[in-house]
Structure formats: structure tokens, C-alpha cells
Amino acid sequence: MKHRNAVLVGLILCLILVISIGLWKLVPESTSDSIISGKATHREYSERTVKIGYLPILASLPLYVAQENGYFDEQGIRVEPVILQSSNQLVDALVRGDIDIVVESSAVPVLIVETIDPGKIKVFSASDITPETPFDSLIIPKGSQLSSLYDLEGKKIGVFPGSTATNLLKSFLKDKGVDVTEIEFIQIVPPTQLPALYAGTIDVLHSYEPTTTIALESGNAKKLYGSVYAEQLNHNPQGVALISSKFIAENPTLANKVVTSFDKASDFIEQNEGKARLIIPKYVKLDQNVADKSVLLYMSRSDNINKVAMKKYVDMLYDVGELKTRVSTSALYYVP
Image (cartoon, rainbow, N blue to C red; front, side, top):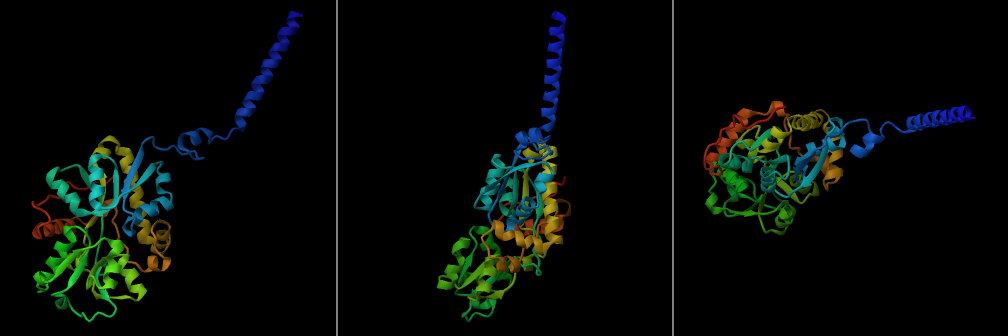
């Protein structure tokens, strides 16, 4: 009897074991990955979330492309996009460690930080503004009688907030022989620039994309002059993408992967511009017609930054008084 009971118990235990193995096989292999990453995938994701600061504007297109095309997912990177409202806010947050990456910022606050506390920030991409890709323009109301730069004397020009846009435009006009002491420069935030132009509060607007295209497509404005920035410096690198030096030191592999993702986005925009433009209205409040016609701010790969143009740009900023001391750019870059 005892022998039979032992055999019976053994059979029951074997049966339980077989059933358990069968049930385990029925569970999808992605379950453990799903719990860790929040996604049903075999891919292992980074434990550290990368915080990416950006402005909700057209110039942040590399981020939109990387998100839309899944480049961060391909690298197994968790990202948290963080919206800020100015280049100064982006750079300040990067220096504090609140964010790890900046998609696109004016180069000026970066260079100012470099003069005060060098080495905290690295550049991994830069813009390429040319006469063929004029990211800025001087526009006037459709009925305006202005026809040349000399007509600007005695007028009011709306400019992007901050001293840089004003000082660079003044320098450009001086070089053209225009008396800038007879011009009033009024700083206006982008959302109110066109209303100010149409209402006559200003006579001329130094506009950036997509404001220029919005105005021209509406039929309410016309172009007085092309790109000031491209004429001042061909292949102008005034827009830069940034990465924290501390983030690089503490997370070298992750830093490499993030910048590689942005390099891939830059390649996609250059090679598939039409498809990239279809992505824009999903992230920026623009009609597809405007997205199709706006001049894009082309950002370089990390291994293709025009360092000669960057040095010239830094020297120009020093000459117009935006930088109080000259900045060496030799150690400013990060390449994976």
C-alpha cells in the first residue's frame, strides 16, 4: 500500500511539472521585456532616460524625424522630450543638468558660457545657412513703397528678441552704407510679428522661417531682401545642437547612441526632404502647404560640421560686440 501511494504521489508530481512547463511555454517571450521597457519587444532599453530639450519650432525637425522614424527605439534609448521657450532657457537647463541634449539653439548663449565656464557643453551639429537656403529675410507689407535697403532709414524694423539679431542686422546694414542711427529696432516675439507688420506698428520685419513663408503665402507681404545671415557668412552655423559634457563622461555609450540617432535624422532630411516635410505638421502647427514651401534649417551630421565657418562666425560675433572675448572652438565639438 505504501509503495502504491509513493508511486501515485510521484506520478502527480510529474504531471504538475509537465503542466507547469507547458504553461511557461505559452507565455510570450516578450513579457519580461515588456515589463521593463513598457513595450512588447525583445529590445533592451537603456535604464537611464535621456532628456532632450527643444523649442516647438521648425528648426527642431531632426528630433521630430528621429521620433517619427523610430531611431531612438532602434538604439534602445528611452527619451523624454522637454519643451522650453528660448535658446537661453535651453542652454541654462543643459548647464544645470536638467536636460542632456539640445536639438537646436542659437550658438550665442553657448559661446558665452564657453567664455565663462569652458568645457561644459559640446556641439554635435551645426546649421548651414546659405543664399540657396535663406532661413531669414526682410519682408514688408504688400502695399509698402519701400524698394531698397536705403529706404529703411527713418523706419521701424521688427527683429527677433535678444541682442544678437539686432546687432547682426545693424552690422549688415552699416556695411551696406545704411545709417542705422536713423532706424528704430523693435524686438518682437514670433507669434506677434506678422500682426505687428500688418497693423503698421513696424515697417519691416526681419523674419525667420516659417514666418516668412506664412507671410508670403498669405499674399499680405512681399520680400524686400533675402538672407542677411547668409550674406554675412555663407554656410552660417548660427544654429547648433548640443550635448552635456557631464552626460558624455557619465554615459559614454548612451551619448554615442543618441548622437548617432540624430546623425541618422540629418541624413534622412537631406536624402528624403519630401518625406521629412510630411512629418512637420504632426509636431508644429503648420499647414502642409507652408511646411512644403518653408526653407528648412539644415543641420549637419556630427562628423561634418563646418569648423572653418564656425570660427568665422565666432570672430564675427566678437567684432559686433556679442562676445566680449574671443572663443577658441578647437575643443568645442563632440563626435561619436
